[in-house]
Image 1 (cartoon, rainbow, N blue to C red):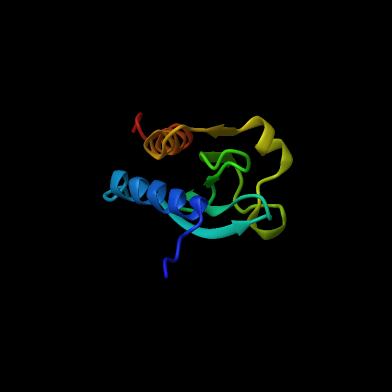
Image 2 (image 1 turned 60 degrees about the horizontal axis):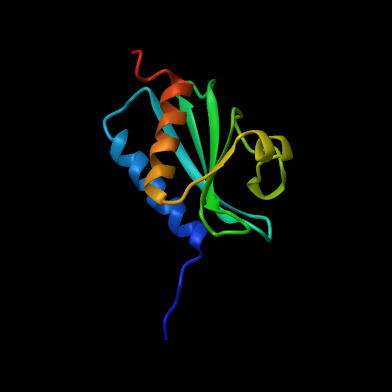
Length: 122
């Protein structure tokens, strides 16, 4: 028997591992992640925060519902406001990007974090 993981879970794990490698020595931010599922997409929502938990961003990593390509949605929020850790409709339409490969998705997630927390400027 072969047991397979959902695309969204595999993409999420890959992107989060890339983020962990990039920020392994970073002490100004922290993160945690949980699953989300809405019958169309499944993956992880990564919650990144500053030292005081005052500045936060959520990044959803999943397989796009029509193509199964790696997709990222993000929102400046402390916790997801929708049911089951989901992004809201505005974030889906305004802050979602789909990639042809998971390496590009990883780099984009890293760029979102660096820009949000201004890590390059410190």
